[in-house]
Image (cartoon, rainbow, N blue to C red; front, side, top):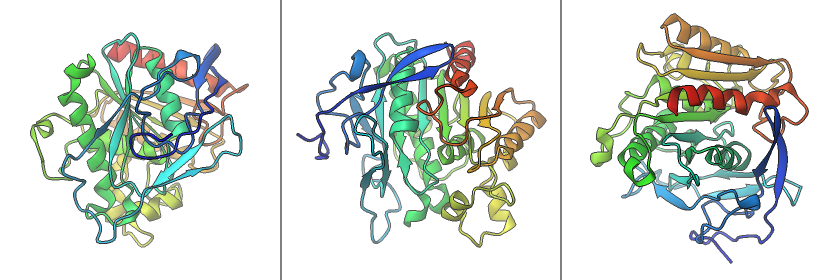
Length: 341
């Protein structure tokens, strides 16, 4: 059996438990291995939690600026645990969103940009798992498969931002289809996806692609944004070297670094922000979050910041068991509810 894109499905679908806030929350993970788009049937996941029921292509006539030698979409299953999927996707030439529709919509939406160091996109632990968790709490969730800047696209370091802007505009354009208030759409991103989230919340007005249809009349500004253990600065000593190289090139000058460091580009009308980082993160230094926080505060932008002593990097939901950082989803939920619900 295969999904609508011809990607093989595996029959085993299980759940795992994570601690999310005060209690244990059942999070559906291990969606069919090798699956990069929702199953054609939209069947319920474990414990009745919803799987993605549809895919929205961002560019009806194809993504702009296709390289002369297009990349090939490739899915790698990184998990050695048959009960827990951890897929990484690269070579995306068909940027798209998969949608998690809640059983009881609250009228708000969250667009998620998973991380992966701009080398690939980790769609399970920083995408689908959050999609299920948030949709179970009433949010309509859109997980974004964005193009990668190191794969030769004409837009270069702006290619992922172009997809994020286009995605936000499409969500608003189709808000009535999903029962969404177009003024209650948040962005959330993790690690390099947190950089993309921060890039969007600071450069939502930057013209990084030519408008293609009436959807592009909508604003790309998120109504709230949550960069989670984000890559922010492109400048040493706190830059994440891998993300920096793939985004702007190893030899980028100071002007190029500044242009792609969200802390250097905060506008006066940036949305409220929720920041989260672990101080023992040995991949993306906590100073990244602190730099963005300082820049937001300097412009008078509301920013709620949560720093945890322990958590490391890339914890998402699944790596929080037994740690104080397990509280983060409920902290986000309380913050987002006050702004969006």
